[in-house]
Length: 408
Ligand code: NDP
Image (cartoon, rainbow, N blue to C red; front, side, top):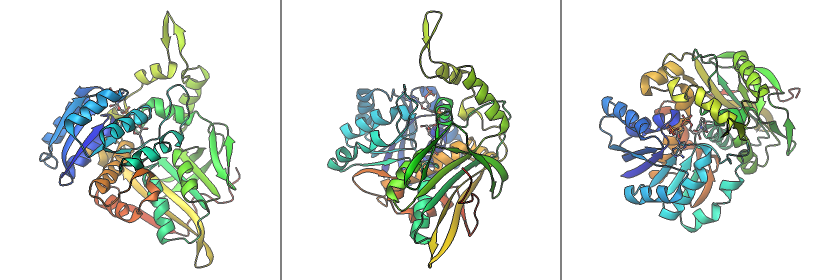
């Protein structure tokens, strides 16, 4: 018997709500709350009309997740065991504050970033360690796909495949086609802030910075084929090199098509990706916020989306005394996601792991007091649940998708 409060009713919130509703023996009561209640109501109407989820007990509410007293009042009224945050990274700290105030566990899929600086790092949320520990509460950070499943894949290979892992490459390919000239697969503001930042990778135990999208190379993705992949800084690199200190080299690669790069370059050159306020006819306008209002919502991309994603982790180390490489990955089909939960694969691959992490916490399989990254917990039950809940994974031994000695 567990009550969950889901905050956020965008692309990911839609998937989380539907997967929790499918898993209604664990999630016996669900409240879906967001800034715009009508979006929650539309999701719940679909849940009630599907045979697979009609038995779920689910209600909706309006909440401003920037406002701690409002959040605390909602939590006190509904009394959830866990708050599952799939609003935006800006709301992480207010939702964590409300959980501490009301004595409720917490889970999210993206680390905090301040609105006025395009910078994401774990320092702000790791600083909550003692407060969660003192209250006997658990906060699980970054439980989507990347971060999330990529951290679990890394932990699983450390546990079962390699003795001395020292080189990590995370590869993220979306080979899908949504038919739009330019759109982002998750919140446009957060996505564009991430991609236009400088790149960064871990080399011999130190961060090396690059220009945005400066380093790229083709990667041959299983189930998809070769795609140009760009080196980015991604948040799980920070926690993985902390929790696996023997990793001396860590990189993250993501694919972008030429059309996406062309549009992003023009938007950046004309100032549309700026996050500082600009005076326009007596109003203060933040160009990126205005751009977000023009772009398609991630939740609207699913219908007609074709193709697949392939996201995986390559880990290199030693096995029985010799050097060895392992690659663990998932391939997900956009059209199948649409059929199942009316979502595209990027929302699906984020929402399913969030539901799994919450279920493991609520059933006591994953437990602890304090703030955790996913790789600190036993990967085995999570790996098993991925196969059950729609994200089956596969393993390749002795295949190198990214050469260790890549010219950087
Ligand atoms: P969307 O923009 O589609 O949805 C965001 C939702 O949050 C919307 O429903 C929005 O409400 C709501 N929201 C925003 N501000 C507030 C607020 N102050 N109070 C209450 N609700 C609010 O984004 P996505 O669903 O694509 O992404 C959700 C999260 O998932 C993001 O943090 C993103 O970074 C993360 N993510 C993680 C991934 C991973 O693999 N780990 C991958 C992809 C995404 P409204 O509709 O009114 O705007």
